[in-house]
Image 1: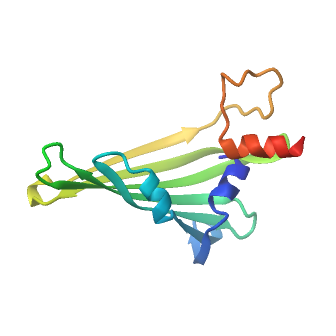
Image 2 (image 1 turned 45 degrees about the vertical axis):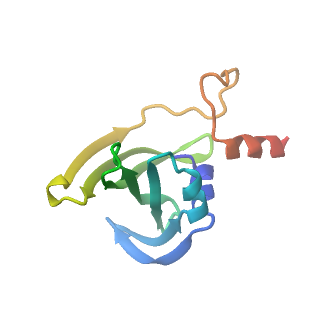
Length: 165
């Protein structure tokens, strides 16, 4: 969870209130992806019709402690007889921030992903839930000599590095 990327994701978000997550009082930022951008993601028979992110940031530290990511995708069946919808919801708690080269980096968390499929027929409804505990054991920032073939950062990070030169 790179702080620069997190900041860029929520740069156009709106504050929608406050909520307590665990022991942390948080402010909640909501970002809804612009319909024009969603339209660019259209791929033949599939179309993302809604994508929202809610970030819960500690009022004490400003760090992201919880994130909700929700997609709604419409898919035209291969035989063009109907439409199937997939709703994907991901909830992730982010913990164990430690300073690495002066940057706070989350080192563990817990994610739950729920997939819900529904369509025209009531019998076609299915729900799947996946859960994962994750941990980062080692973090290195700006490793000298690391080939770009090993790690390709997001384009906004590349642009920022060019601007700093």
